[in-house]
Length: 238
Image 1 (cartoon, one colour):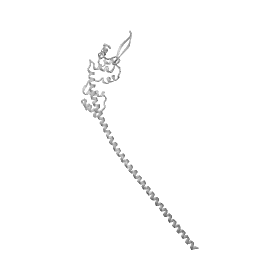
Image 2 (cartoon, one colour; image 1 turned 120 degrees about the vertical axis):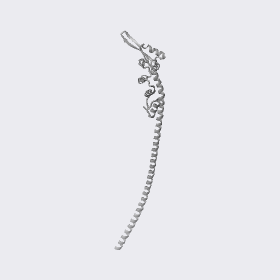
Image 3 (cartoon, helix red, strand yellow; image 1 turned 90 degrees about the vertical axis):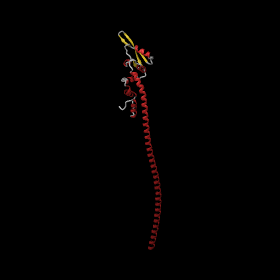
Image 4 (spheres, one colour; image 1 turned 45 degrees about the horizontal axis):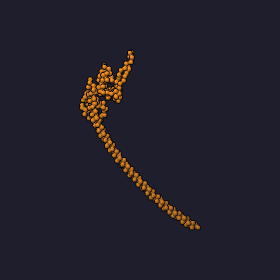
């Protein structure tokens, strides 16, 4: 283990960018400093997770708050002591039990998680739950510090990635701009080539035209010579 105090534990979590939930955080902090019995925590968290009167009064006995030897009379005294309100802090249900002598009704109470927690914190028989809530209070502070530092670390890392991405985009933009520049140069060169080809074509057409004219003149002269020669031959004969 790379830490021995809560502060070192927080530093370890932040430096390694480890995200833990509050329950695991509480368990680890308890191991480091408080060292109280919280073996009940997982069941307890599930037990008090609902916002309704759902915890049967038998749980008070299971958690060592009271015994039910006196029936539910003791529970009623606790409710009065803590000024719990019916239908708000607890519900009362009359449950019928069929006996040979007839139906016997008994009271069953269902506590709201808030009322159940108050019973635990004020328990006279054990201080375990009071210490547990002191542990939670301490953990809330340290967990908040840890989350803030973890978020800062994450933001710094995120900013670093953004800066890196921006730099990569700038490089890509430069390459794109260079490519566009080269493309423009090629297009310009292509236009020059087309212009040159057109000029060459015009020159070739002129040359062909002159050649045709020269050929025509030669042909005419040749024809004249042929005619003159024929005339001379005709005169010689006759």
